[in-house]
Length: 114
Image 1 (cartoon, rainbow, N blue to C red):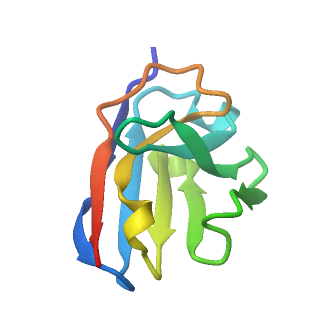
Image 2: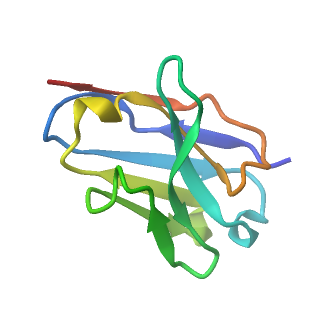
């Protein structure tokens, strides 16, 4: 089983930046399309960024132009660079395959103050 560990969250002021990392155990990481999801209090978990095995990406409209997803298959790691953060980006962020077939990690909390 692939295990996922997210890190890099924290408290930041609006307009600031954070870089999230997700490291996966297992040698088959490179076989998956990977995504970053987020879940705000009382809301469902939504996919905000996706990176395909070949490296192409797409984003939810709410983060397009501000977030950048990348991956390093040699390190079994996927990243999410978040710039121009807004209070509405406050959530727990998770990585997983798309469509979320791996065991979910604990996530990393991102809090953006106004």
